[in-house]
Length: 183
Image (cartoon, rainbow, N blue to C red; front, side, top):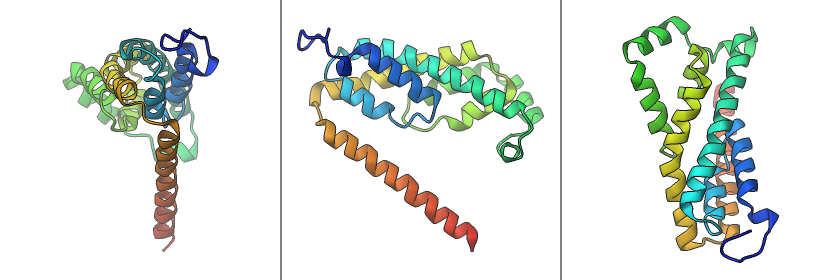
C-alpha cells in the first residue's frame, strides 16, 4: 500500500523498487538515480535508503560474483581488463581496512565504482563484506536522492528524459572514441 495515496499500486510498490534496484546493481547500474528520484515521491526516504540499499547491495554482491567468475576464465577479451593480481594483493595487504572504507565511500557518491569492483573481483574480496560496504555506502546516497524526489516531485518525464540524454551522451562518446581509435 502506498503511504501517500492509501492505495496499492504495483508500479509504486517498494518491493518493485527493490527488485529493480537489485537488477540494476547486478547489471550496469544506470537507472539507480532515476529510480530513487521517482520512488522518493511515494515513500519515506529512510525506507527507501534501507530497503533500496539492501537490495542494491545484494545486486552488487551478485555482480561481484559474476565478475569473479568471468575473470577466472581465460577469455581473450577479458585479459586486457584483468589487473595484475600480485600487485593488487600486495597493495591491499598494506591497507586492508582502506579497501573496505574505499568501497563504502565510493558507493556513497555518484561516481562510478567499477574500478574498485574490478579490483575486488580480481583479488577475491569476500562477497558478503563487499555487500556490507555497498549497503553502508548506499544508504546516505539513496536517502538524499529519495529526499530530493520526495520534496521536489520532479516530473517523471523530466527524469526519464535526463536519463535518455545521458544515454545518448554515452553512445556519442563511444562512437567518437571508436572513430579516433580507427585513425
